[in-house]
Length: 86
Image (tube, rainbow, N blue to C red; front, side):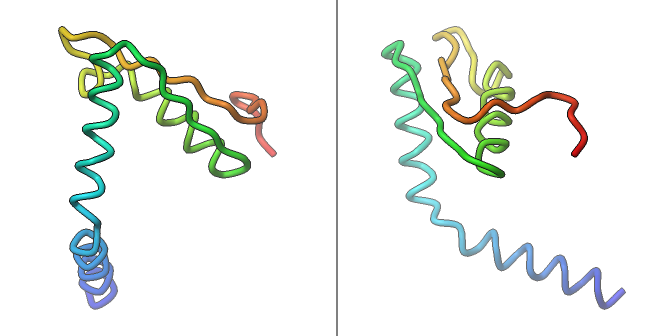
């Protein structure tokens, strides 16, 4: 039980430390890019490439796509073989 409470408290502290204003600015940039039919380039190498690819994969979801159009995301990273087990 102690480990669970410790984990939850660490999560709360992490959430409290998030730079809300910066996150809001990023959301506005992405939203404006979508409204202006602009492209978003996300780059990564190694684990960051995986994060970039994941962001691209979730972009067609309703959170990123409403009546104003989809957000066009282009991932620039080394090829990642889907389903490959290392």
